Length: 352
Image (cartoon, rainbow, N blue to C red; front, side):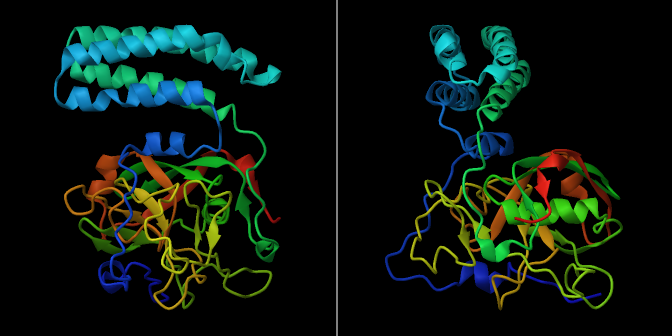
């Protein structure tokens, strides 16, 4: 088996050079992977996104068990939906209008369930109802995504790319995970992962590195190669480091935040939650990632969201959204049984 492509050495993370006075990035305080994915959609929808963030903001009152302010905030969500309903619908294309209308109708009923759970001081019921409501908002927001938001540099034309999102199941010896990978913000990285999943490249590969509160890594192929060897060329396929900064029109390629002097920048896809998917490259190069990937084992006490040196030096390309109990049990004695695309396969394009 080829040697590990390790992009996350302790030295790289904890003692990387930084100019005097440069602070760590302020980062994204959002830790819910589904919320991060909603926020990462390339859309401008002030009313709908405002409703989303208002509903997400109930977390603070819920944690403190401030039920009366919580009920008031949910009431504001309901009032906002009623007042802006017609304006929100005007944002959708005609072909998507029936689906959008149905989603907003569902959302109205779901917010009633959220309000009832708040009134009953039912924490578990509130969380379940809110998650359903936010899922409807996210589905509506996804309908607003238009053309792919940027041009991928022509130098990468030979690489597959994911022009949208895909959902995959990762079946392991401990059970199954579900992950969403984001081609809107990391098209080449997510594209490589989906392409290899469809080739069944990851089937029966072991986890080769497991460090508590740090990373769980796989994707090292059998044999001498350290990554995926393209059968057409006989060469190992390399994927560039690809990180999109919030507010930038396109990702950086093969440059870290340090390289461009943007130490306080925030990535659209941050390493801010347990089960963030990251792409492995070596300590010696940024552009030699090929097939190895890792799960970031985020722990709030050790790596506060956005206040780590993984962001800006490594490419996140998706998030585990289900199966966290399985992820907690995985180690170097385990292996991947299969990785399969269950939604979004049509977004994979062979080349530019």
